[in-house]
Length: 55
Image (cartoon, rainbow, N blue to C red):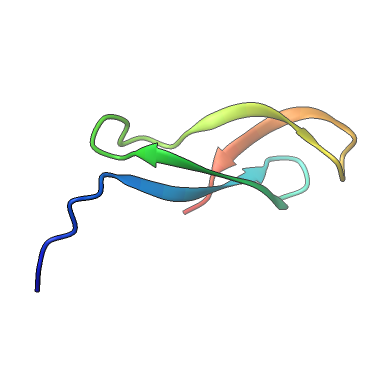
């Protein structure tokens, strides 16, 4: 099989307090192998909370 040359992969961000998957984004795993964490707005918690990359 041919090797996939795309380095950017789609990831899902999970809200830490409520564990809901509210955002999707892309990330280059070659440059950033660790888990992504951002403060984003969660409509279920009604505030800005940290969102972490889902495994």
